[in-house]
Image (cartoon, rainbow, N blue to C red):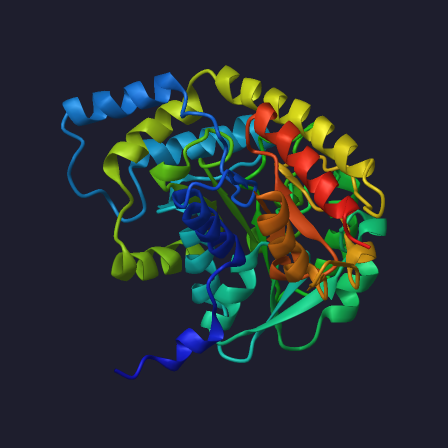
Length: 396
């Protein structure tokens, strides 16, 4: 069988690969601590689960409108108004099977072959893959730890060409946890105002997991709002990863284009998950805030533990649930016959020597770092940090 050439433009996400390796070793009876996946270890709050049961009992088990139930789109509008002071109408909302599909809809609806999409690094692995799938060209702008991994207006403008069609970023950021302030976003907006053909895709899936004040959306700036696509969902802030539900808020023309595409791919999202999501958005968010406080405690522990390891440089993430330490000092070192030639070697060394799964930074566009998820219990994190320190101390 001859497979389509488009498959050559993408590869298996490194996050999925490392999680798969972790499961295989666990199946062999090895005590692996998996810090590779970005999945809250909390259960979905009970009142959201109860709403799903109620939805089934009330007969919400049929096909749904492609764009999502009107009540859910109205709830998203209410959430955006209350949380972000953003005003959208239900026809400007499209509900999809996870924020990943929301991104796919958006990118495939805008990018033509040869179009360029600017992506600041480090970035979530799927951005570049989707641009490549659309036969566009990802244009990476390297951002480093000394700037908290954020793009500057100067770097942004230098990357823009007459082929630039899109800019994709996340705040809070996966994998760095960096959060853009209102002032930093405003500075980027002054650049975008000069280039009216660029669509700005703002991935805000980690919005609620913010340790440093109010979340700021780039959609708040009226001069570019019509060109902003806000991507969000329920996986992270509500611990609803398996429910597979995300959404975009955007101008009506783009939402209609994405709806047309989604109608051919998946049609409407799961009916039961949608009814539960209405409850998630409109009811008490105390369980989500309690979850964030637990993440804050874990973050403070992990960042302190990593900063005390000789050779590691680390920023202080203001959001999400990842540490992204710079491990360049360990490249070239060895333990016995094991030589650390790059970040992937170090990730595999930690897997086999420390029995801890992390993800190499090259997967996110920075081969001097590793991504370590702290969406795990404190007991596991304490043990994992101990193992990582011991393993790294053995490298000479």
